[in-house]
Length: 405
Image 1 (cartoon, rainbow, N blue to C red):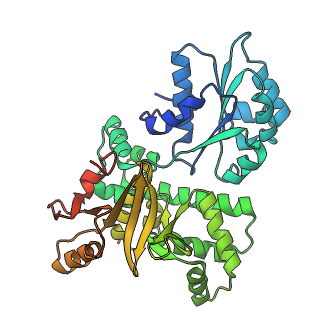
Image 2: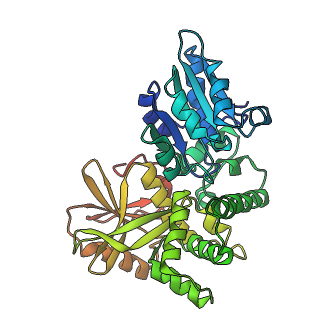
Image 3: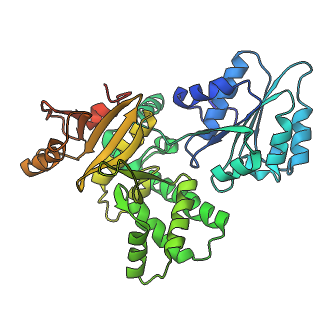
């Protein structure tokens, strides 16, 4: 069974649709953003199906389809095509997928929102970036960011396909939905490598007309294979210099900005208890999907330890937490998670079965007061909780809706 845009139907992603629902009837343009192949088109299709079930008129246009791309190439043609299909005395619900393929798309969108229309759009991360619709739609929009699947979603979709998806597979192959539809791990790796080439290299290099291609490629590889580590622009510059590649701090910052704007990485600030503020010069960087790390590993030795921390970060964001890195007296806790006036200190370790690792991880918590709940997440199934620290096995954490259980 296929959706309105020609893709296989997936699980209903209410987590993303529910925040959009209050704007269903608004004249603001609803912009669905996110990294390529994370499921934006499916979100559009599911919203369209919701309208259809209510008997409301719907128009879905995917500009990757020849029937539309060959006949609608500019703003005037798009506006005329849509306006002809507005039913007399009714509101039309319009869904434009990959709208960036239309020259002057923003002009058409600004004009169409003045008609009896509720307008939803998506676009490729190569063209429709956050500053693009901020600039072109001039406040006449609301934006919603969709991300690759978290583990709960992967399990549900795998069940629909008659498959299973283990925690170990999640830590290696990540959450791009298409990976579940492929027959074997070799096909998955081919797909992920191609996706990386399209998203990280082609899209960004073409979009920003990057001329220092070798420097950009090396920087990208270094950043994505070094997820869940603290970076500064100067440390990245130092690495490039060690590779005999000359690059300014400004160029490093510019390239990191491109990756962040295209939803490839997320920068997480450090929070210092000493200054009670975020530190401006250092941040941890997490990959939007851990597969960006895995495809860069050699000899099948995947970086499970750092991918696990990256996965915990992704899940915390999905749960709605604001996240920063907590630093006290040069001691670092992986995450300070904040939501609804509550704060949690979250430390991630692959295992604390070894006594030395146990002592090291718990020592980080022992110097802190009890004003925040302390949580340790590991891959161990044995309960290592103490009177002051709650231990949560990764397998249980991945099925939780929040940190209260």
